[in-house]
Image (cartoon, rainbow, N blue to C red; front, side):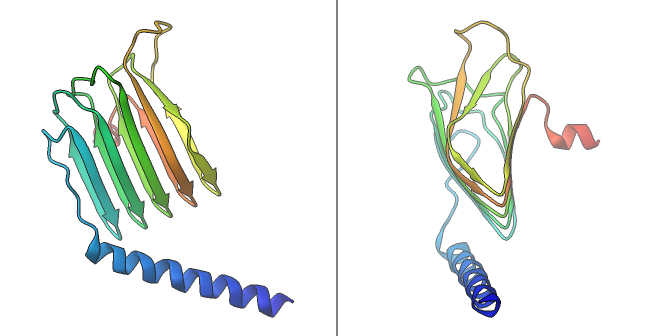
Amino acid sequence: MFRFLFNLIKTAAVVLFGTALVAKFVLESNAEPSTQEIDLVAIYGGQHLVSEAEPFYGGKVIAMCGGVLLDLRRVTPAPTGMFIDLAVVMGGVSLVVPEGWRVKFKGKVMLGGWSDNTKTTADQNVPTVDLGGFVVMGGVQATTKSPVEVSV
């Protein structure tokens, strides 16, 4: 029984890493500072985007064995709201928002974590960034100060 379980885990890991490798060469990012709806891909690497979109609607973020730093402090929120669909597998996403904004995570987490380190006011009319999708063996962090600024 132990040998079967070990072989199953080993096979799943090989398939996961092989799929990520193929996806690295097939998927491309579509994310510039002025892009209103982003497609941000970080596979076996990292992506850093400081968005200045007017308005910003959200988009998709994929992080597989890689990391994404998405800074939204310069965006104008879309009147319909902002939604970011996440797919994080053995990677991480740091989302930086202005002080007072609200971030809501409505996704699924398995063997990973979600952390909201924002400074939100009690006002219900502040801009809200809704996060969906999934996190597997990875992490998502929302904050008001960029990790790059903290380490300097």
